[in-house]
Length: 145
Image: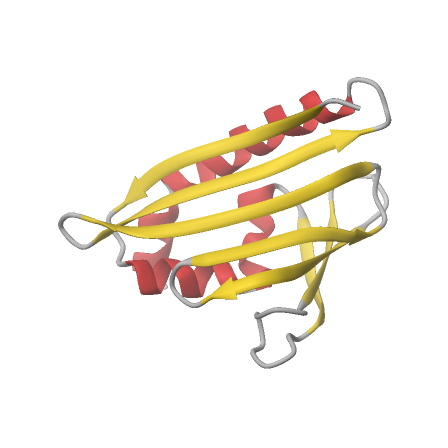
């Protein structure tokens, strides 16, 4: 089973703390990932931290659940699919760092693999497109909030 990587690396002008708070909130990720997202469970010590679980539904596909496995405030969120879906060995990594002028670099990587032939490259293309478009709109979205 071949694995593919979604790799989106973009700068935004919004400060890192605000970007992190927005991306850490499960319900904000729907448009970013092109999915319906709902909270299943809060984290062990923080609402969106390690152990928090979200349900992700894309189109007619059966929902899956993602669990936060690493949570470093204002810098890193990692998650894995822990229930459902046809994807295997899936991990998502969102790393944030400061850029000059007070902005933020968003380095978003997702490993995608599936036992269903042709599915992983399709998922990679869709996620790459949706995440790239959504991050491009992030500054204006956060400014309006």
